[in-house]
Length: 89
Image 1: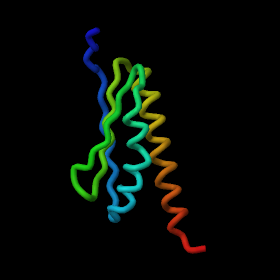
Image 2 (image 1 turned 135 degrees about the horizontal axis):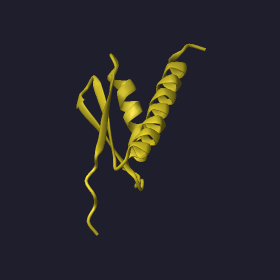
Image 3 (image 1 turned 180 degrees about the vertical axis):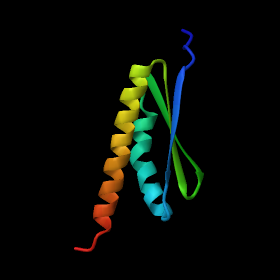
């Protein structure tokens, strides 16, 4: 079976002063990005130690919207959790 080429692609860059935050975010997102999703694909990359890139590709705009909403929600939740965990008790 031949796979259709993706027609929609978006890259989200997350920058942080502390590379440990991006390491943690990458560990949180990578299992989700590696999963097979029928209408969208995602890849996580670290172009440098201060940046994490999440690239999402899909065959249609509806799949792109759904995938971006999902991944941006996970990024937001992961960063909020990291901020909360870093606060002194």
